[in-house]
Image 1 (cartoon, rainbow, N blue to C red):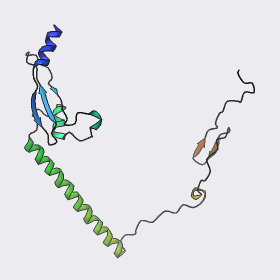
Image 2 (image 1 turned 180 degrees about the horizontal axis):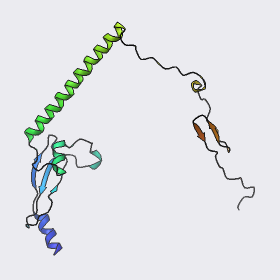
Image 3 (image 1 turned 135 degrees about the vertical axis):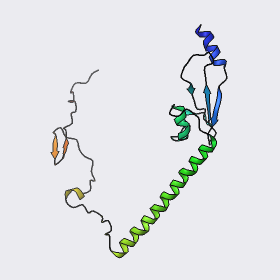
Image 4 (image 1 turned 45 degrees about the vertical axis):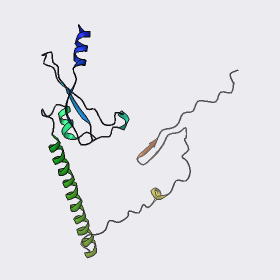
Length: 161
């Protein structure tokens, strides 16, 4: 019976729920046998190679529909409206950042705010390390660091032949 069921389910063509802006297809396969099962929601990407997938390439509206967080698939108008909104938010954020940079530059010039100073390291921490650290058999500890001793197998005087 399973063979007949599989043939029936696979013979039914998938209905396409829609397309996204980059051309990916979202098919929706329903069961025509009358059983109540969860619908399979898939994405057929434009580039069918898995290694070419990039995070965020599926619009969030389609992602919500695929994961079952929304019942009605998104329309092209909704996708375009949300894309314009995202671009508008990015543009406004860039404007605000530019205004903040101008205000900060004016405050630096007027002397209201001190410029960030470079921290100068003094003492043993400022000494450069030119040699590789030698592993010793004895453990060593300095301040907050602990270096366990290294173990090397004893050199066997007899060679195996």
